Image (cartoon, rainbow, N blue to C red; front, side, top):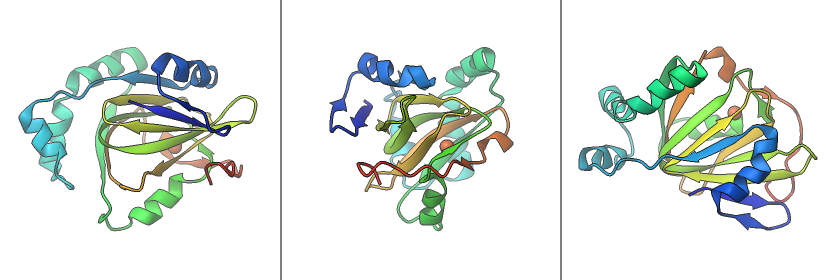
Length: 181
Ligand SMILES: [Fe+2]
């Protein structure tokens, strides 16, 4: 279950209340529980996955992908797997830690672990959203946001794309609130 952290220290834990704050900037959040089948649990419990294991995980969520293809025109998907021992993890984290936008929606379905998305609201205030297994998030193109890992530095998420080019971060230079920096 996602948790929204506000600069005034409020923590919001219900989907409708979180939606009230994020819908005005176009961010969509939904709860898609991850199936509790043993083979999938075993795969998701591994810190790293081979390409064929990644395909196996993705195949568990094919109906979701088919829906997104039909409703939003998404063409490709992959599975990102981050764990603390991944070479280059800090550099990768740094790339998305600053305020940025994309030319394409950023759609993620968290299937294991957790991460934090930050957003700039319409009035300039900032919030951070903890997402974890079962959370689906769509950050619309042009929305100013950032992403960082939690101290566990571990997440597995399905990423959906219309084009890979749209995923390049365009930095806005906006500093993060002292509540989150
Ligand atoms: Fe991003």
